[in-house]
Image (cartoon, rainbow, N blue to C red):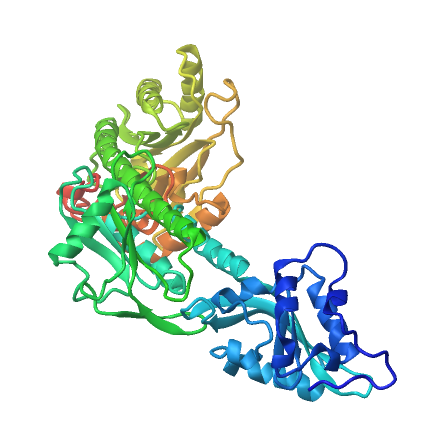
Length: 611
């Protein structure tokens, strides 16, 4: 029993005096009505002034405080502390170990350390599995135990200053889940099954709130009478996941009407589900079934089954959280449905676009000693037709022309402009018998005069041989570049380099700009590669890096047949390409031998990849 303080004023006999002025609160009234003489700490006249001062402080603050008096740790607590006790309140005047019996094994070491060391401790968001409401409930507290020391150095009790942080901890934990689900909205899923699996994978990481989950979707999302099928889940025994039981189907389908359904006894449907909580574990026997209605739809596409934790209060916050999860899952499914619709429309549009684009691109010129291969690949992420093109043709004087160009834009106008520019260039080159620079100058003027107003990059090459080189097959190549990526020359000895030259104006930017011709010699076994920027342009990198990659890739594969080389280049960039790609490759052969066989099978000579 606490002793009086030596040399101090005697304790007061009037407990009312400890409570100050003003109207008494419920807790203060309970304090006054308690028969303290019948408790282990005895009548108030035996209480030390240190204990009385602590009790007075606790009973006159709105902060949660508990005084644990005497060796028995008799509880004296205020109004702010009472809610922490739940159904254990009232317990004024009872020993702490009796009131918090289930929690005592956890609390005892902390309390004994303070009694022994006479030093306060402090805990932030300490998890406690408490039975205060008749079930093992997860709760969190921030608190301190402080010793009450009399003038003689004896410990007459402890002061517990505490706030409950359960609501904040749960809100933070649930916000984290909501954020993880929200991140799924940025991911495109291949189908509803994949979307359901991604959702339940996230839910599986938050089993403390949702010990199990299952997504059941209508086989036909447009028909609420169609069968519900299990698509993904966690914590649900696989043997019963499909829900073949008729009574289970009833409450699953009931949620399709739009209202959440709570099922309190699931053991007849599932095997008991045991899930670990943060502070303990227990069997989950209750589930809630919520409709999954994506935004913009009037009817659900399925239902979401969520297990309820046996360690959490089933209050409004928990219900709101479950509804939020269902809404987010429905949003992911809705995004996936919209994506599938877009894919279907895009596939149809892409098919028509490719057909139109390919109709505008011709087969390469046939030359038994110049093997020419071309390829066209539409942008992976675009359904629109674009302005990329390739062309090869022979003029009356026997010269062979190679052209690759790119009209700005991705629409039907770009494709129409591409066809106009290609035909104009063909006509000018065929008629004038001039160099590439002169042809591009004339083309720029014609585009301006005819109102062909789109910016267009072009690289044009004229390949001819002199009469004195007919046997060895050496050819002269002239080229001019109007703002287009530099073509590559691939030498028979293994050298691969870009045909770099000072940049000249793109067509349509400044008609009348001066243009230059450049020359090189092409020997048998040498090759050329012309392409549009879609082959080397990547998000986050510059064209120089892309060109360096292309040089390295071509050098490593230069011995392959041209068809295989072109296919390999396109395959290497299929997943990253964000623009159309037009590709034109040439390899020269000696004229004193049959080059047709070396040019590859006639069926693939210059052909487009099969669709």
